[in-house]
Image (cartoon, rainbow, N blue to C red; front, side, top):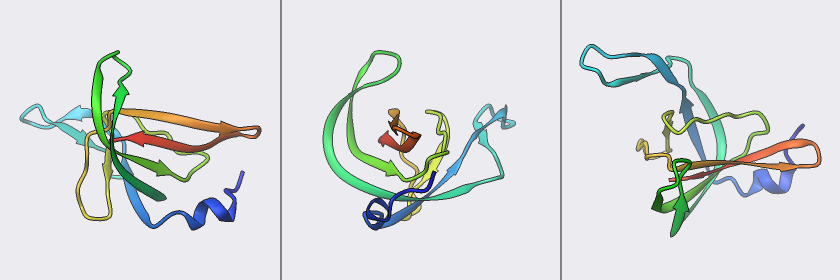
Length: 108
């Protein structure tokens, strides 16, 4: 399913996604896949309360709307913003329409 042009027009930035690798570094730090995918996105700043999948309440500072009908992000994955930062992912919501997944809403 292709995204509607109106949604893509909202995208003022891109993000790069790397999945968490099953391997740890020599020092026990997480490592990430060498393969990465870049997605169009819209970043909306504003503090808001989020309930994480573990049931803990956290304050997120922004919502990242990832415009992809096939993207799959895990909370431990690395998402690099256009400015080079990689925020902690607090919750990932899959938003759907009548055809299936429409986009991701990532609370950071």
